[in-house]
Length: 168
Image 1 (cartoon, one colour):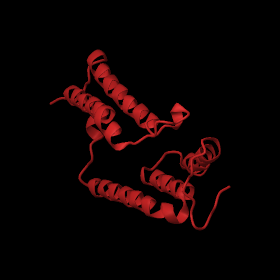
Image 2: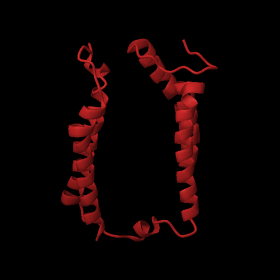
Image 3: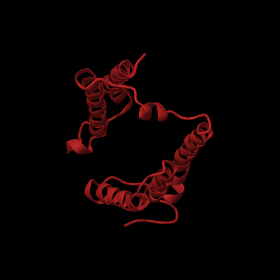
Image 4: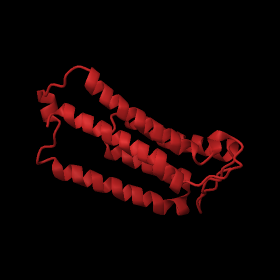
């Protein structure tokens, strides 16, 4: 199979996953009260938005392969594949990401959501070898704080606090 066929299949799979989320998974597994005063505060709002984004991305992938220029295999495409000596490092990075995700779930009750997610974001940035580590560190500090300020003070949603640090 060539790259175009793979991308068409991937696009169809992405669309199918988005439709599955929209028609089955979100209505069955996400509960929402009927008396939510603002649409953006409904527990159904953001999962629906994400499902629609997934569907749009699948349609975009198919459209770029059908209407775009033909895909030609080049040396850069062939060299993008993992070499046998890089495979252990890729597996180690994947395992490290899994450990960080499990650690995040364990750390939230102890450190709180803000501190735990900031640390997890910084560690994941190191694992993926970001080309801008200073920017990633600034985002790891500011993004959780800004999201906490919005949800705790604007939306009125309780954000889990840790045992050691309590934010205002």
